[in-house]
Image (cartoon, rainbow, N blue to C red; front, side, top):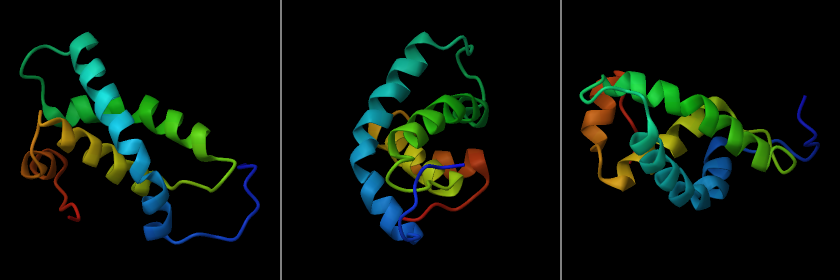
Amino acid sequence: MSPYSGPEMKGHEIMALLEGEIPTVSREWLRFRESSAFPKGAPLVDQVRAFFSPMAAFLKKRHESRMPVPNEILLLVILKGIERTGTHTKSQLESALGKKLPD
């Protein structure tokens, strides 16, 4: 259970608060890719899945006292961070995950 006890926030409000985490996600994605045991050319979906768990746990822990953070919002923040590194485009991420991402 989250220690957060404030008013419930809407997804766009949570997303706005997490915007500041995108540079952290980008930096960690590059670090992950450099140190990852994934073979070159491993499916992007597998790489994102492996990165999501520890990154989501880190972000939740950092923000749990201020707000509950749904996994759907975390996924958007993480994908935006990956996109901003330039290693993959939005369309590559959408194709790998089989879902359309907001702008």
